Image (cartoon, rainbow, N blue to C red; front, side, top):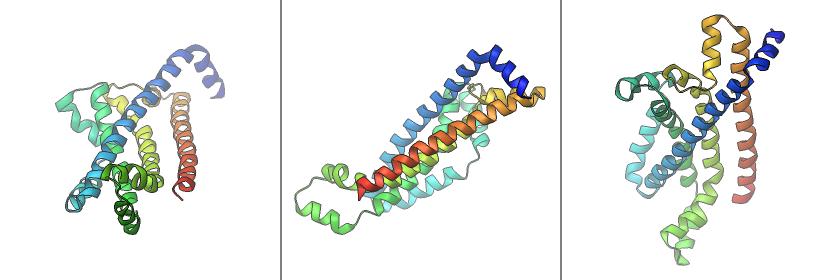
Length: 211
């Protein structure tokens, strides 16, 4: 099998790196939108406690949706290709960011908030200078969970024509090419591992910063 893997890279290096780039680009695109939406909804929930139950219930509902199920649900409405795959990945990445951000904001001591208000801080200043910095470790934990889930689920996006490393895996399954399965699976695992290590470093840094 090792000879097959070496032979594959000798002939298909360009197509491999194209698949890697497709996988990374759609994952980061989905993560960015998930983080922006998650932060906005979490802040809305934090500012309006009556809405918090509904927003968190919605995010919990998103978490139970299977990745492949989301993809197939969107096909009748949006067809196949990059956009429906991106939308499905956004849904999957939104819940971890939203849940952890709400949790982090709720951990901000009320005494600190009251002190900041007494010092004349506006709601915007309170959010930017106090609440978000203290909640940052929780937010980054949500980002880490979202990114790992998105990277893994982006493999399934190949089913609806979004490209990426999933093409290697499904081609390997269809042709009984174990070398392609190993290359595709190992590449996805490596991307996930690098993402986790990077975000673990940022989480440790944020805890020192928040302290």
